[in-house]
Length: 203
Image (tube, rainbow, N blue to C red):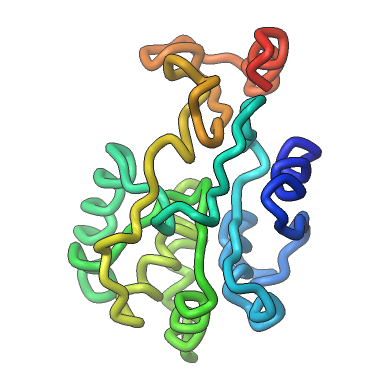
């Protein structure tokens, strides 16, 4: 937390840790990230939401708020996007954006549009209310589809969510701590991978 708090101070942003279930107490913890589109954040031009296992490497001074894009759309997200459309053809679309859940950067205009698309009844959210079953990614996709958001220009550079097992983590925008040690494995606790990056002077 201190790492991202320091980054926020560096770029002149206000830092806030979201806890509990402010979006919908009946939905899973990851779904609570959708809270970023709530009215309480309308005082901000841009809002960045990152997972708690995301870190900025030492010496990284690029301001993400000056970068183009909303979220990640790489190999894994492309696969999940296709799977989502296949499983939920009535509410999902291959023409609408799909963003990975580790990082979202949204303008006020986009947040308001997504919020307005969240009309009742929104019981469809229950379809994603299972661990590792789209969750916040599915909710944001459906809201973007309903709001008519064009996918063009909404995808961030992959460096802003670089998996910790990939080469040259010191050159990343943000590092996403994963369980894998290398792309092929094996796996170990995330904390061990985090400590290794600290010992190596990356974090």
